[in-house]
Amino acid sequence: MIKYKLTCKDCSCQFDSWFASSKEFEKLKISKYLNCPSCNSLNIDKSLMAPSVLNNKTSNKKFIEVKNKLKEYKKFIKNNFDYVGENFAHEVRSVHYNNKKRKKGIYGNASTKEIKELKEEGIETEIIPWVDDREN
Ligand SMILES: [Zn+2]
Image (cartoon, rainbow, N blue to C red):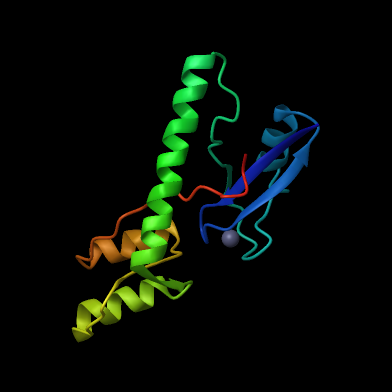
């Protein structure tokens, strides 16, 4: 059995699913048996996985170093920015269009679709890799 992290390309929802083999995944996808649990879209693909095991000690050490930097970065963002959660796209627009003043920058969750839309509206956002603190 293989566990795949799947991403819905329409709503960017992510979910895990088990398959007998990678061939079974392709087969189910082609026969349209794979659909998104949140929007029912058939536009499903495998997510890119972060490398969990690197095969030599040096790169593994480097990987942990980079990961710790990301954790520091995350901490900095948490301390200096306001978290707006799922409202991110909405809040960014209100700052952009209504000249709404905020003491701090904001961060939150946005789908790739929302980020693309913001970009089309001329609003630049930055995507940061969010490492899970509970890992390791
Ligand atoms: Zn979906």
